[in-house]
Image (cartoon, rainbow, N blue to C red; front, side, top):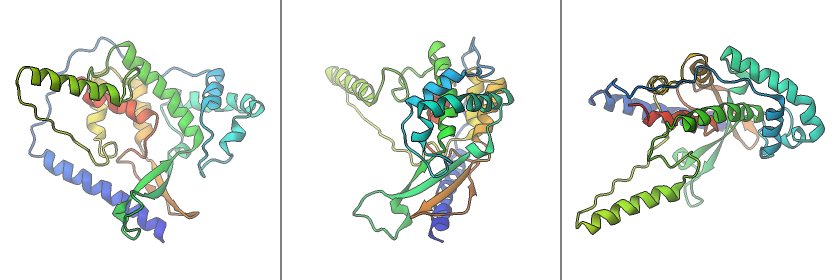
Length: 273
């Protein structure tokens, strides 16, 4: 079945990239274990209120995934929100207190999208995977993402040169920094060399072992780290093409999709080393 073939292709692509990285890493000196002492910690995530859950639901976009039992626009009706918010809050707080993400919220539904209309539609590598998550998973991720981001901001743990996923920063601030550095160098009659990298499947090839160590280095430990570990474990991906869905495929070794919480977690990859 075509959907299964695409699912296998996307998985194999990431596996090959990771294997290449691991092979190259054997010839590179490992990073130093010495890190700047952190006088703060995030040992656990806070329980969330029913009001907060209701606000997140109402503020969310109405996009719906086929994994959702009900269309999102129905959940956002005032009467429905008032009815289900206490139940959702109970489930989320149980997840936070037990450091366990429900298995039903670990699914991603992927649609292959042609990168350019001029490309050959018969070649798999000309497609990129676009993932959709269950609506409730995105709400739960929003809860955790806000707490991680607040912790990083409050304790000034963001990399000073980071522009993405950082309040008050964007691609414009990144370009402005580069342009300023170039102008200053040229004013001093210095030469300028600029190296730009476009990493293939950057989030999917992040080493979880290194990531967990970095998170501990910036004080994210205990049940908070256990929750993140559960969030990244035993994830399932299915590919959907013209209404036909592939068999579920485990993707526990990588991130399933671009989500609220992934960028905030990965922000730590450049911190505390």
